[in-house]
Image (cartoon, rainbow, N blue to C red; front, side, top):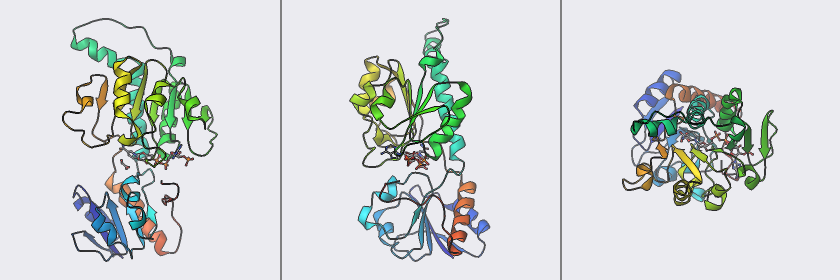
Length: 304
Ligand code: NAP
Ligand code: GLV
């Protein structure tokens, strides 16, 4: 078995070591320009030159959950199946990150952080939990993990997905506007597709409850940044916690940096954990070699 690795950040040495340990008979190497022949490519955010050289691979494995950075190549993609990571430790991390953010807003830590900077000792009225509906866009592997983590806290929960869902204790919507009306905390965990690009524009963000907050842990392009900032500055929204951005990092003069009601993290809400990822990918390679099907195959028609 011949495995070719590529990451846009060049950090492949731990992947090489983990694959050699998991599959001792495999030949494992990191891609250099001009190189190509392999059975399996394990990649993240590849350049067009590499994609063009993968026409004969048996499968392409992604080093993450999102598929936008590969599907953007459209017709130039090789015919081989594309297989993304399925959870691989990301569900727990997403649950931690989003739960922290929801509780921070619910218990007014954002307000108390600002007060403390001004030396103010002033208890504020508690938020009413029944007015703190959390709505999760995307009820896939990560959205479901977030819903389950929030469940014990008793917030009203709602979700929105492409196909209808029934989840105990969660109001599942197919009408997006109805979902947004009355949502106080909006969590975005959608894949980035032509349908979801710029989905959260001014009209839709305006439907959120007054004092609402946005937690975006999916992709920056889901949100109209100007609209989000305008609604925060107008006082309709109380703030946002953003882990992902249209350009990463945002330009030094991007208004998000200077807006105190926007919390920025550097795309760390759910990191790829190399040991878990390699365990999962190696097992899938062995299953494919036995002629079996594997989970987490990307559906090119749906775009995720
Ligand atoms: P997933 O299992 O494929 O789930 C995607 C969910 O979105 C599904 O419920 C799907 O509906 C729904 N959906 C897709 N298109 C839709 C549309 N047009 N309208 C309504 N719902 C739609 O994906 P996942 O593993 O949960 O990951 C979600 C995203 O998180 C990834 O694509 C990636 O961009 C992002 N991510 C971010 C980080 C980070 O560190 N920030 C880490 C990992 C992943 P159905 O259930 O009907 O199919
Ligand atoms: C990270 O953003 C991922 O999609 O895995």
